[in-house]
Image (cartoon, rainbow, N blue to C red; front, side, top):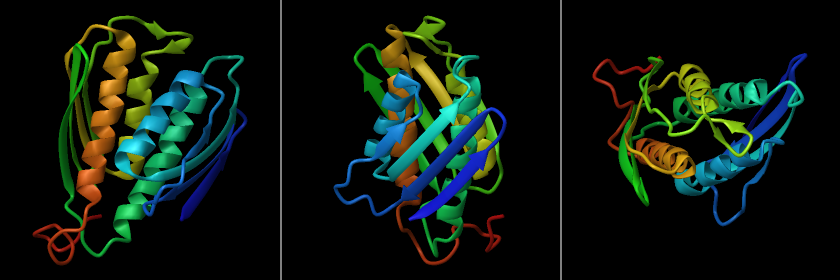
Length: 192
């Protein structure tokens, strides 16, 4: 299990990540209900065990909490794949969520980039600002140093749209982290 903490004037966050999930249930508490739900789905579908404790300035809004969780989770994902002797590197997944359809393609390349092509039907799901989905994945992709393409191909219900994105990301990450080949999956012999 690997762990990181981040403390600023806006948030105090602690995250533990383990790729040996077994059958343990993740423990996630960010004080942002919809975000907790999405992170729980991310954990389940990636088969990564997560413990997340976040205390942020939610009286202002949820932006700092969501972004900072993305920063730390990204750093942990980077540490996870940097320590592996071999892994598949690439992951691609389409996920339908009823009427919605999302595609996520990622490369654990050491080159951070986010291409986010998802317009959500509404600006909020409950009290959660849907623009924070892109902020989360931007922070995560930059700090994990992954190339990440997220496309919402079909929409409808905003909850379903975002859930399809999180599940597709989780399944793509799971595929990219699987053991594969021998050595670092790069013709250069290194991923930095």
